[in-house]
Image (cartoon, rainbow, N blue to C red; front, side, top):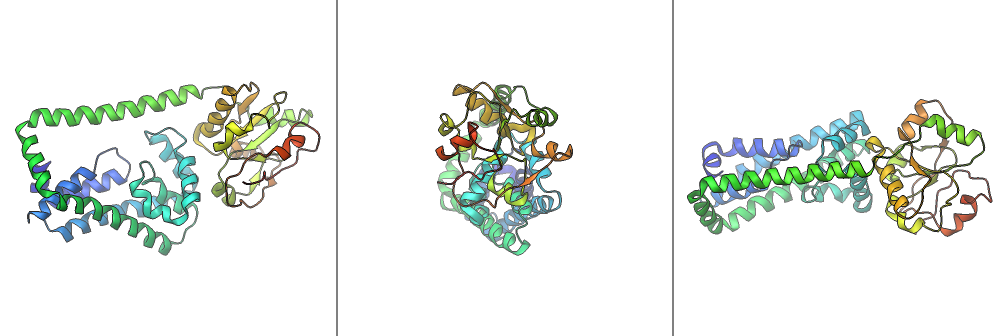
Length: 339
């Protein structure tokens, strides 16, 4: 790394940052730290190094922001499919965006998995270009400055470490390669196990519509995040709004003698299947994700209602709703209370 950075300098730093920010799992912080150490020794210009890292990040983030603004949630689904993390990554990122607000763009570079998704989320939320540029630019500046500054501050220790690694160059290169391959392998296996655990029978929209028409009154739960519901107010008539973070609290609040159907906007209904599996672990047996989610329901031409504007705070199913859920009332669309 030292030889590469010394020879190619800013070009290598720019390319490494740009490729990593576009989504490839290539470590970039070590490159910036080593480059910072070289800058402290006068072999690189610290200001030019910072400018190269900042420009690469800004280009990548602007690309993802524009894609999110032009293509909406389809881009998020693509990101989730190529991510090494489990498919709940988009839902988790949306929850973080909702909890932290626009400051998420400043902190995103320091949160694994959020760096690439946050600009796209900002685009899908129609955040103004000026607000995005200001907040994202501040985050990029802090992240780049911390990495490069750490290298400059610890340049003597980094120099000794690099000298030691150069003596063991074949072993060092092999160790780094093994560690990187091991990390990717572990993440890939985690994703496969996660998907295998969520393999279960889905109910399609025609089957759900037939259950409703036959008067069987299934319990339908909308698991989309408040951010998504604010962007798309459509809802399946009779659906309850809920936060899947509160699944364990539903044990005594959902009926066991009726079909419970979850839907979301996650790729492959991952979020809905995740909640269904967790409820099955709690003893429920008649729970299924809706194949295709709300999009499939709308595409089939079935009736949709209009949900309430999402409120601040976590949304959950309160005990007061038991009467409706157990069949003592008309299961009309309900925004379940907050706490």
